[in-house]
Length: 219
Image (cartoon, rainbow, N blue to C red; front, side, top):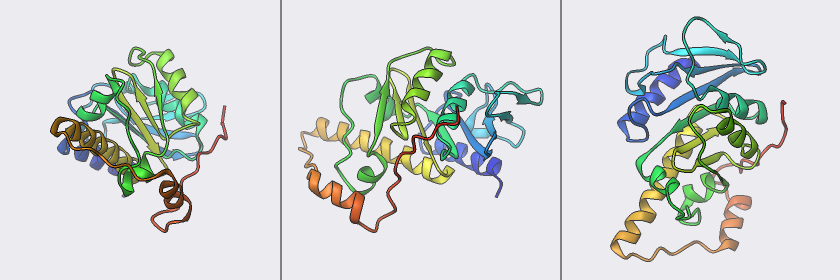
């Protein structure tokens, strides 16, 4: 399956599972060291087709073809330039994640296996207008520190070394935010996994190899 086909499947999956809505999100994948594809402007992820993507050079931002790339292309370019290990980027505004992005409620990672692994590092940036260079610069600055960046009063961008792992990271984030909110609503006291146990899980367990952040920059 090509990267474009994988993105089409991912877009449909995100919509079907309430991880995205309308035309509010955009997704991309790295094809090689200096090429990426990204959803075109105005595309609806529930009905993505093969020609709904724009190919772009990562170093220059040069777009091939006549279609207009998503207005969030500068943010995607910044991440790929900053993180050579990033192979896929998903930007969306899932309900529970966006609710937390619009509040000061902390997103806890010490809750269950997947949250410990996928939510170990979360960065936050202030609100900037969608598609602005200010937003792209803020995201790029934080890309060295986390694979999840919460954009205040906007949504989230996640990235990973594969499309499937980026999707799992987004799903884990949304489920965790929903769990925290539901616990508050029902008066359930969440019990956090002790810090020592979290450290042991990340460093010594056989769940998955820990993904250490790479600070190598291509810019």
